[in-house]
Image 1 (spheres, rainbow, N blue to C red):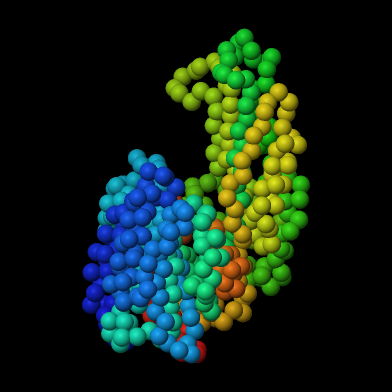
Image 2 (tube, one colour):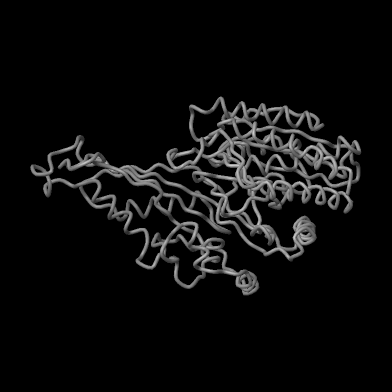
Length: 456
């Protein structure tokens, strides 16, 4: 057993207790009332990096939620790797569905239950423990390391793009490893080749300037909820195809080899449906479920509201109606162009008698790493040695905005190297992280850093 591995084993309980302290910070980036808590999480990360032996550690202001940077650059001739992760979390609603308070972590059946346990505090903390173990035992690292941990990933990293562009020299590296990610299953590894991008629009429909008596005015003036429903219904056909003109024009088609790789990955519909509790799969015709969720774009209605929401009946003709829409994008779609296409479609199909106002939300570009990338190959060998199985080549249906930003500004590809699992209820009540994944991730990062350093 390597010295760093012995150190990790001896300090196992301390690391777990420190993670519990980290998880007690309610760093919800989407809620302005929690901005101070996101800052407190940044301060926790800053101190913890210094304690681990990382140098030049500092909190970088962004104009929004902060970034924490650190480095260790004493391995001349060795690669420089940037490790990425995020310390902000999703909101906790609905609170009544949690079995225990979301920011009072509980260990039960080998799992830590808390908001942010898997996404991403548990995974972020893994490489820090490994760096500490190496520096405290042999006094050095096998390569040069930089760290970029952000506090705004869950809201789309709105200020991160400018920060990276303005500090290219500070963040420059040969490649990036992202702790924000996961494996295929408890006993089978996966290598994430791509993440989807994101584009969002918000619709506001104005009818009359105040709610009206539906008996007096119904049938005489336009109902904004009726108008909104017509607009939303026009976005897809009955089989799930997106009907926005030009939406699919730039979608990169899967090659025969890529389709074959996806087809090799086991799929059991009943198992897939167990987590969402849906009655069947559904989606764009001509593609299987993995192709739909990994390599095809989507347009989803995330929220819709208007009119009377209380118990019982109130016969009003409402004055307004609203909806939120987000699109997951794939290579080579542009989030700004997609938002423009959706806005154009909405104005085209909007019925008369109402005023339609549309705001564009933030956007993130999709990301795809070449399958022969050197860092990806090393990560694959580490995972194969650790699991005893070749990793599946997979893609993530979610979005990690930083991946495309690193490629654009640093010309560095990102290898996703996290140890969360799909069933750990990310973004949902009762989020958890397996302690076995925490330990396995530590061993994986130790081996990874050694092999990256050995490549020269």
